[in-house]
Amino acid sequence: MPFETIAKHGDHEEIVFCNNPEVGLKAIIAIHNTALGPALGGTRMWNYATEEEAFVDVLRLSKGMTYKAAAAGLNLGGGKAVIIGDPKTQKTEALFRAFGAFVNSLHGMYITAEDVGTTVKDMEYIFMETPYVTGIPKAFGGSGDPSPYTAHGTLMGIKAAAKRKLGADSLEGLRVTVQGLGNVGSNLVDYLVAEKAIVTIADIDKEKVNHLTNKYDIQSLDPESIITAETDILAPCALGAVINDKTISNLKCKAIAGGANNQLAESRHASALKELGILYAPDYVVNSGGLMNVFVELEGYSSERAIDKTTQVYDNLMQVFDIAEKEDCTTEEAANRLAEYRIKNIGGIRQHHQGRMSRPFSTLKEMVDRQK
Ligand code: NAD
Image 1 (cartoon, protein in one colour):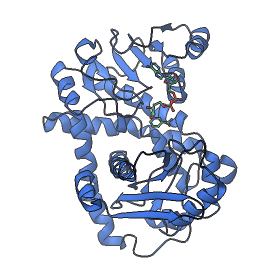
Image 2 (cartoon, rainbow, N blue to C red):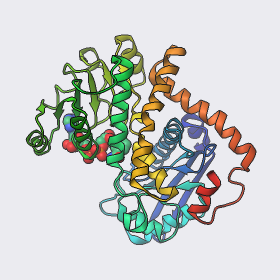
Image 3 (tube, helix red, strand yellow):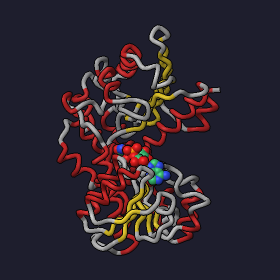
Image 4 (cartoon, rainbow, N blue to C red):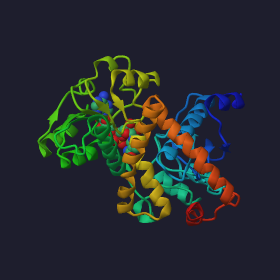
C-alpha cells in the first residue's frame, strides 16, 4: 500500500514514520529530493481523518517543496513533515521535543520550519532537540516572520509580469488589484503604493480594508468582484483556487501575479489562461521570497540580504516566461521544467564533486559551509 501511494504521488528518496506512543506522537517526515541540498519544508499539524490522508498530504507537499526551492534558484531540496493530531488540543512540549529528536536523527537531511497548525513556540521546542529547524525567534538567530519577504518577492513577480506582458519598466500608473490584505497582502500594498501603482484592494475583513483606505489614496472593491475586475495585474493574496471554471471566462486582467498558494483550481486552467492571452506568473515562483528568507537564516541571518535575495524572483520569472515561449507550453509547465532542469544539471554536479550528504552534519553552519 505505501509503495503504491508513493509511486502515485512522487519519487521520494526517504520517508520516516515517527512513532512515540508515550507522548502521543504520530508523524511522517517525507524527503522528496536532496539533489540540490538538504530537504527543507515545514511541519504541518492537522487532525487528518486517516493516516492514509496524512501520508498523501506529506508526499504531495514535500514534492512541491522540491520544485519551489529548485525554481527559486536555492541550494535546497524538498521535504515536509506532518504531525497527526489536533493542533488546538493535542500539543505538548514532550510531543514537539520527541518530534525534534526524530528530525535530529536525520542529521540535517531534513530541516523543518513552521507550517499550518504549528507556531514559533513549537519550533522552539524542536530547537531544544535539534539545530535543524528554521523560523525560530530572532532572539535565537532566527529570521522571524517571512511575510514581508514573501511580499517583496511578490512585488518582483508583479514587475516581471508587467515587463513581459505590458513592456513596462515601472509600475507607475499601472492598475494592480490585490485580493487579501493579510500578512502578505498588506505588505504588498505598501510596496505597490511606494511604486506609484494604481492599487485596488479587497478583503472579507472590513477593518483591514478601512485601515489601508484611510492610510492611502486607494480604492476598494467587494471580495467577490475583485477577481474579475478590469485591471492590468491581478494579485491574489488570500485563498487558493481563485482561478476556476466560474471566474476564468470573466477575468479582465492582462496578467496574474500574486502571493497566494495554489491559485489555479486545476492545471488545465493554466492552458485556459494561455488561450485567453492572460500571462500567469506561477504562484510558487512568485511567493518563493519566504523560502529565500529562511535560506538566508541557514547562512547566518541578515534582513538586508534576505530582501536582496528576493529580488531574484524577477529573473526566475523571466526564465519561466522564456521557457514557456520557446517550448510553447504553459507558464506552469515552464516553471516545473525550470526546476527539473536545475535538479538535473546542478544536482548532478554537486553529487559528483562533493559526495553529497555522505557524512552527516553536526551543526547547521557545517551544513551550509559544505553547500558552498
Ligand atoms: P493571512 O491569513 O495573513 O491573510 C489572508 C487574508 O485573506 C486575510 O486578511 C483574510 O481575511 C483574507 N481573505 C480570506 N478570504 C478572502 C476572500 N474570499 N476575499 C478576500 N480576502 C479574503 O495569510 P498570509 O500569510 O497573508 O498568506 C496569504 C496567502 O499567501 C496564502 O495563500 C498563503 O498560503 C500564501 N503564502 C504566504 C506566505 C507567507 O510568508 N506568509 C508564503 C508563501 C505563500
